[in-house]
Length: 238
Image (cartoon, rainbow, N blue to C red; front, side, top):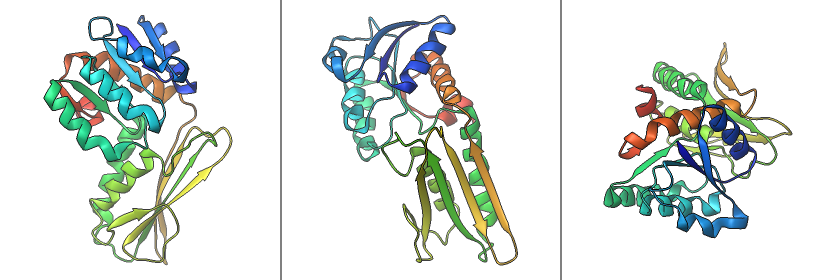
């Protein structure tokens, strides 16, 4: 496949190597120094675009791809307030867009475990639930997109929780997410249910960025034959 990389930081470089190892061609590498070149790419020259950039430019990158007929997948977080607008554009353009807060296969299975546990814990009102996420110091947004997805899985299933907050809260209806930033941590997420008699914890620890990058390339191989807005549930048939 002919792949365009939108964002060429650490993640972009790992994706590039995995894509090349799997026999694909990188036809464009768009970063802040050549951002204007994205407008010249079209579905005739690019089979799929992989977007791991910055929150400030992600939405513009994605809309350009969709308008230019390029199937695009994104792992950038921090722009999701505009997601409904992008969904509308995809429908108008008959385009193809894929979003995941995390492309690791393990993390997406972890999301399902989280939802299942939350359903079990819903009637157990003696348990308080909270979350912790740890990432490298270069990560700009907090909480992480993965943590937000986990939080939504709890909120959808634990009726006593109404919203998440990125701090410690004394309000019973708020789900605490504590965000920590430490050197050289690819990503650790844990969900805790605590009571006076015991604790239950589920945890996912990434050992490197390679799992995220491989997942993105696998999705990129699958995406060009799809239409509309797709997710990891579609890809993994969960």
